[in-house]
Every structure is written in C-alpha cells, then in structure tokens.
Length: 518
Image (cartoon, rainbow, N blue to C red; front, top):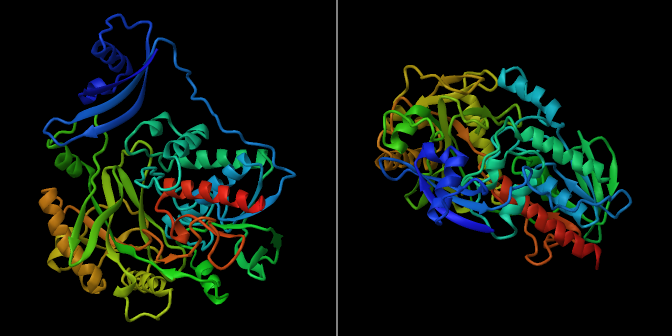
C-alpha cells in the first residue's frame, strides 16, 4: 500500500521520522505502526503565526522503502558517438552533457577554469586578499558560479523541464536526501563540490571529455553554420553543434560575439548591494520570538517592493551564510553570498537589488552591450572606494546608508577579505542608491527591525543576472542567425540560477539531438 498523508506538526515533532510515521498512520486510522514505513516527500516551514509549524507530505507504505533512492538515468557509453561541443562547465553545460549522454551523443566540454579541487586553492587566495585568478574564482571553473556560492536549487521556473528530475540527478551524484523534499532545497557550498566531481566522473566514464584551462577565443563558422571552436592556446575543436553555456560573467564571450557581428540583445537585469544582519535578529523577526526553537532552521526572508516604477527585491538570500568576493578581474569589485549545508554561520545575508532596464541607460554606448558597460562602471566605482586593497569591500551600516551619513565604525562582517567604511549612499548611481534607501524603509515596515545599524551593506552586488540575451529560435533552440549554435543557460539570458540553468541545458541537449537527426 502506498498513500500520501498531509500533516502539520510542531518543529520538534517534525524532526523525528518515527513520530511523523506514527502521526500519519493515526490520521488514516491505523494504530499498529510497526509494519509500516514512511518517507517525507514535501516539507515546508509555516512561520506566519506566533508558533511556527512544519507542513509535511508523507508517503506511507506497508513495505520498507529502499535506503538508497533508485537511479533511473540511462547513461550510455558514447566513446565513439557523434560529438557536440559545450562551452562552460556550469550547471547548464554539465546537465546538457549528461542529457546528451542519455541521448547517445558524446559531449566535449571546454572550461576556462580549473577542476574544483584546484579551484579551491585560487578561491582561498582570493579570500585572503592575496591574488585573483581571472580564470579560476567564485564565478569561473568546474561547476560554475554556484559551486562555491551556495547551491540553492529553488526555482519558480517550470517553462522547460522537470524540476524534480534535476533534483534527482543531483541526489544521484551525492546531494543529501533533503533536497528531494524541502520546499527550498539547498545543497551547500561544502557538499556541492563533491557532487560536481561525481558528475564529472559520470561524464568521463561514459566517454565524454572535459578540457580544463581551455578558454574560448573564437567560434568557427562557415556560411552561417558552426564548424567548431578555438581556444586561447591555439587548439581547434571541430563540431557540427556548439552549446554556449558560459554564464553571466563571461564578458569576453559577449565581446567576441559582438565583434563577429553575431546578434545580441540588451535585456533587463538588476544591481545593488549585499545586506548582512545577525542571523539571530532575522530569526527573532521571522519566528516572532526572542529565543529560537532549536528544531527550526535558520530563518530566511523574501522581500520585494516597487519603488518609482522599478522593482527592489531580495536576491539569493543566505541564512547562516557568508559574503564572498565574486570579482573576475583585477579592476572591479563584486560581492555575492553563500551558505554551507548546515547554515550555521552567525550571519544572514542577501542581495538587495534594483531592477534596471536598457532604457534606463541613455548615457552608455547605444548598442546591446550597454548593460555590460554599466555593470563595469559600478564595479570599478566600488573598487575605487575600497581603500586600495585588492578585494577589501566598501561597506556602510544600514541605517546610516538610508540616512545618508558616513559610518564611524562597522560591525563584525563575514566577508573574509575585509570591509572599509565608505559612503555608498553618495557614490552609488542615484537610480540604484535612492531606490535602495526607499526600499529598505519599505522592507522595515514588512519586517519590523530589519532597518537597523546592526546590519551592514557591502558593495556591490552586480551579477544577479545577465544584462544580455543571445537570441535563439523558440522551436529549434538555435541562434536566430547561425545553424548549430545553441545559446544556453543564465549567461545567454534563458535562466536564473542552478536549477533553471540545468533544465535549460537538458532542453537544449534535446534540440541538439534533433539537429543531428536532420
């Protein structure tokens, strides 16, 4: 017998599977529970009332569930199969590769950065404010930007693909069981590198190829048809199809396409700051109590407000997390956020960003790279206001920012390279700074106590999404000008985060299969 049961329990009850099973059986009228087993298939926190509850969907069976979830993915040996090039080993590129293998096609991945173990060393240098490797950092390298900046898997996008399938693939490669049923699944930056290594292992064992340290220098074309790619070390890879999955920070790729006359489109994006609060304060606000129930997770939030015709909203909220340096070049300063799997840091941080549309940028070059130019300008402003020390970040107490006054001192901060007091309220572009100030006031009305000088803003959060879309045909997935060229994922303007990028990678892989069968 299999039966789903909906439960609402207190946090302590929901922490014990035996209690969950007993309660679920009692709800359907069964009092003898020894011969039954239970599995959680959905779990969420409802903190709207003074006493938070846990909502559960539980699957009951009179048979034992397998201790290991079944892996139903059919990964073939593609050693001698037709080849497809994939540029980038982020979630879009890796999931495109796995799907191609299922479809009997050999993926050849070219990744500018390093594999995760070597990448860790470069990130350590960056965190110690020693050096930045422009090809190996928080944005570039195996696994893409998500590998060392959190591994959040929540997405509202259901346009192209099965979200549960993506979660199951991550789980089959080593992610924890909880991602299969948590309402906001999260792997954590301590576990995700292991998962990425296992995905690499699957690709290589099936006959695929991954070439690290292989930075794209040219896309080879003949009569508007892809013929291959060239890397900066002079190597040429021939292929009839190329999947471009380079992420939103690969500005050199956008510039390459622009020089080659390949059509690009400016699109809306968002920029702002990271705000960091004591996690204890966020817990108190969200859980309506000065003392947090130990069975509740670190509290998060999701905030949005329209300010002067543009959205101001929280992005990539990291409970129990850290702010990290996300720059990809020496002449810029960018920050992002992450959490480990246990989310047990004493800090909570989130991007708070302002919607920007192409028409908001009249003073920049009138071409499709205007958003890119604006990003660079603001990132260089942040660097110019950091005291001249590599990745030290400009920061300001939150209430001081809203009131437009310099912070005489700064509270403790999770950002390892260090922060320096800087009047972000003066040097941020007015279209961002003024809306942020009004947005923080609005957020305090929704979360009383949010606007406080215990909180710190750190600048700048500028890579929330790509400012460029690479246009593709809605049916074939190919670029509107070039046969065999498949823009994919967040960097091409078709996803926002790990899960939606992975789904887009799978969809594109299916379209590549259709091309090869023509």
